[in-house]
Image (tube, rainbow, N blue to C red; front, side, top):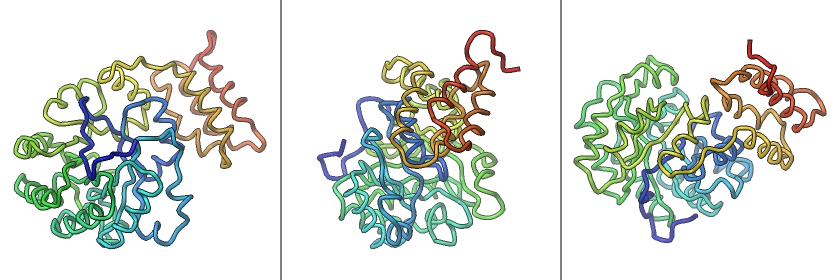
Length: 333
């Protein structure tokens, strides 16, 4: 689903739905699973650093299934030339969009001078985006926070958006929390800084020509519908992983897509596993939250977490055992 227009916006006539890039989570198996739940969402890779791509195995790092489209490659880096090279590699692999991470606050990312700390250097980000846009014909976007440390007011974010958008970048995914670069873990940075949807909404109001995607704290359909009117789309993060069936509710709401049967999803994943060379657990670990809230969900998680490590086990047998706990007569107690 590659765009024909150079660096065209990712906007559509529908509100944009996407699943956030999440390190250690949104690998190719997770994305295939999510695609079964959400036909219309834009999916993202985990953040992949330029160093890994320039020095690593491209097929292992960048390979994906055709069914995953549309899918975006998120890059971590701060050298314009390296980012341009990696963006081109990503385009040649067939990715639909390239995204630059300007939001991750982890110590490892900061030592590499990328992620959230880049928000302190908007001109460098602009140089990076400009170099990538000059190299590829697919959209190049930015994912950022509303601010960092004590720089979390509207003028700080406005300057960042104005500087970076001057390159022609027209799509920003804004995580509506600031990031503390010191003193908080990545997990705490997703929970402790308060959500400021109002700051992100003001950016959209003052930059109506830009596509603004809201990220952060969206865990219910009510929250999504309350905020979608101020933005061009929403990005779902941890909730898409911990409660993946939530994605089907969003599909139904925005695109009138009937919600699929969870068991049908499981059977489709068994067929997918049969085509893979890796361990069964590397796939089923992404499915643990599929039945959250239903009686039998605890046993389902236990089977997919433990039995998948049994030597010579067959995926179909594991799934049949896991799904048997949803039959009449079984209890989650």
